[in-house]
Length: 178
Image (cartoon, rainbow, N blue to C red; front, side, top):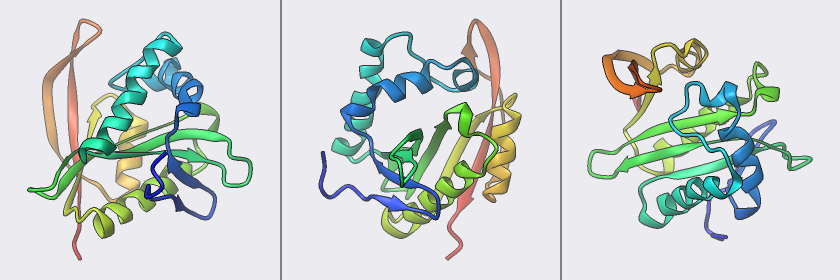
């Protein structure tokens, strides 16, 4: 556990470092059909999910990103995860990613978490631009990006293959105007 990892708090959330003890919760999220429907990775075993845990650790170690566990501050209950990857210090940008367990959907938790993460990225990671790549069919995520003031910059049509079908991806960005 990194003692210098930035723990963040909001009115209703604790954003803390992802630890090996989170493996069952990461698996629960990244194997859930409603989450992985539009998510880039999925796992069918705890053993397989260790790959994702290594990815989180490598982001920190290599300085290419940072992800947090999103938790209830009073109970410690794991709710989801969010953070940044593909951090490019030269161009001062990173890609945002996030997911929340379905029982926490529709309560404003993700907006609360992501607002805090974006503020952190602009203030402490010295980012100028945060990008979000959203499958064009993912209406809920697109609505969420709009609520966070991300601007739709365009659509990459048929740019990826998922489950044997071409999918389109919308590009969103939030630029630090400060």
